[in-house]
Length: 216
Image 1: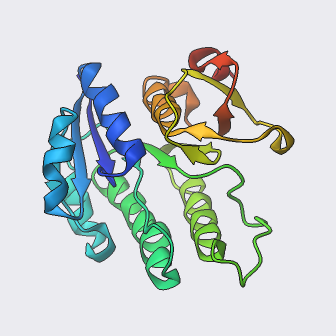
Image 2: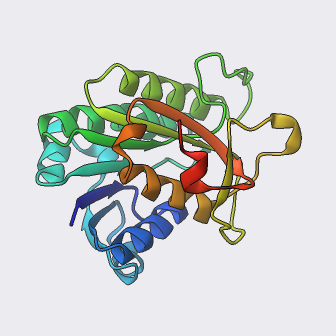
């Protein structure tokens, strides 16, 4: 049994993921900001734990991660407020990476998005700009750590049923819809595949079974 920590445990991808992982026999701690969300998390089989990562120090996050084997970052400010977006999606995410290192949790999976990079091309006056900047900075920082990291870049997220089939490095012309269920399935799969460490995997709903699509 592996102990897995999910940061941002009440997000839709995270809820799918914790249900998958607990069904596989893993012990999951889902960190949430709002204690009112504890019951939803518990329904997935995960253990809810209140941790406001936006306002937590690196040491506090490291204490929470102690004893886990892997951490999945699936948190986000949800857009709308650039200052909070930077505070959560960049600053808190980076603190969680430093915390994982301090807690000797070497495996780290980042849920990012398809197209996240420094030259993302989002105009500075666009509502998505702060998120694009924050994710680019967090992903870049993660690549520079000594963690066994994997960065996931799902396309535009939907609530469609998961198919268990994806395309990796998709062409933007064909559409990049990605069900949250499929995104969670990819996260669960890479946690079982240590050879995916050091890879950035961009994907969307597609044609290949996930295991086959993730082969190098």
